[in-house]
Structure formats: structure tokens, C-alpha cells
Image 1: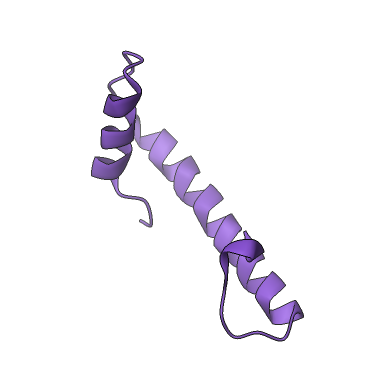
Image 2: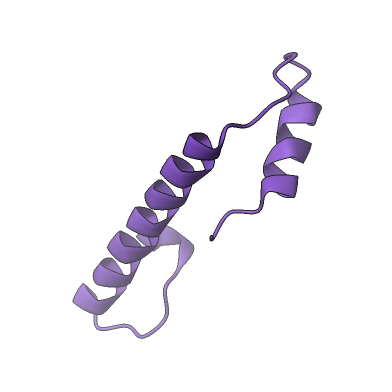
Length: 58
């Protein structure tokens, strides 16, 4: 798992929208999205002949 449930819960609490719970499938889907972003960013860095992933790759 890439994303941390405690950090997500903290963000949700700060939003003060009254949404308090996280389902397991939400965490799974969020994890998939984060992995996809990482893969795309790494591919972009490689295409630009860099070995360092930067914010601009996201």
C-alpha cells in the first residue's frame, strides 16, 4: 500500500465536510491511481533523459 490511511483521514477531518469513513475499495482505487501517476512520471523523466523524477513530471 502506497497511501497512508491516517493521512487521508487527517485530510478528511480538515475538510470538515462530515465525511468520516473510508472503505477498503476506496483505498485500493486510490492506491492504483497513485501508482499510475508514479509510473507516468517516471516514464516522462526517462523520455527527458533524466534519472530524477521531478514535480513537473506529474
